[in-house]
Image (spheres, helix red, strand yellow):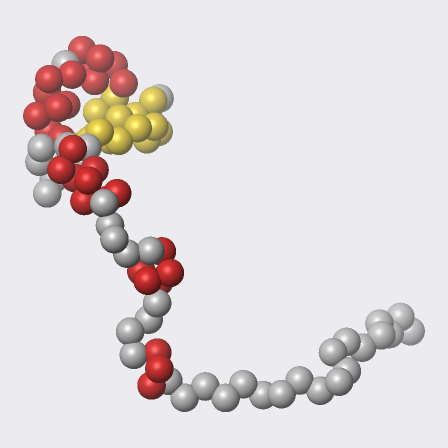
Length: 85
C-alpha cells in the first residue's frame, strides 16, 4: 500500500490520476499544505466501515481476565479541607 499526497489544484487538474492512485492506497488531498480530504477505493472504504466488531470489542484487551488487579479500598475521607494558613 502506498500513500499519495496531492494538492487540491493537482486533484482538480487530474482527477483520473488521483483515482488510479487510490487503488494503490489512500490519497490525501491538501488545502494550503494541510490535509483536508482522503480519497479511498470502495474496497478500502468497505474494509473500514463493514466491521462486525463494536468499538468495545476492538478496545478490549485479550487476556485481561488473567490480570490480577486488587485496587486499594478508599477510606471514608475522600477529601480534605483546604489548609489556607
